[in-house]
Image (cartoon, rainbow, N blue to C red; front, side):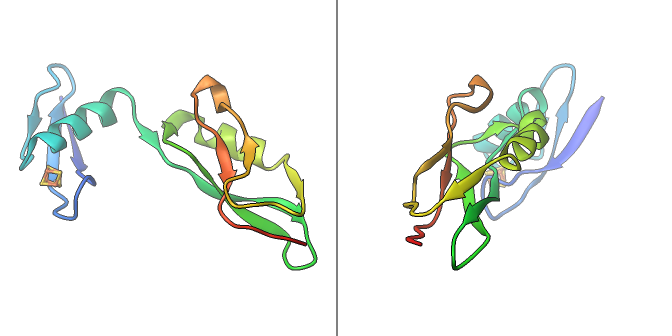
Length: 116
Ligand code: SF4
């Protein structure tokens, strides 16, 4: 069976497909597309950006992101975790909000500084 996907590694956006049994990749213009399709089939991951609550006089939420991609099937669990967080000011850009989420080695950090 073949699975179709669009390679998002570069702006060309090749429409590629992968054989789900043999893992052979078709219509990719370069080797990176092959690696992308195989990873997307076997272990899809995503960077996650979101916001968490913060007690500030300026705003009620602050943007956060993962420091690397996490397994795609953990995204909703991560969102649930982020909904339990309530930060206080001051916070500095890059401050850890969560550490080693789901034993992935990936942290969640703030992406802005908020003094008060
Ligand atoms: S297969 Fe290669 S050329 Fe095509 S979108 Fe992916 S990285 Fe770009």
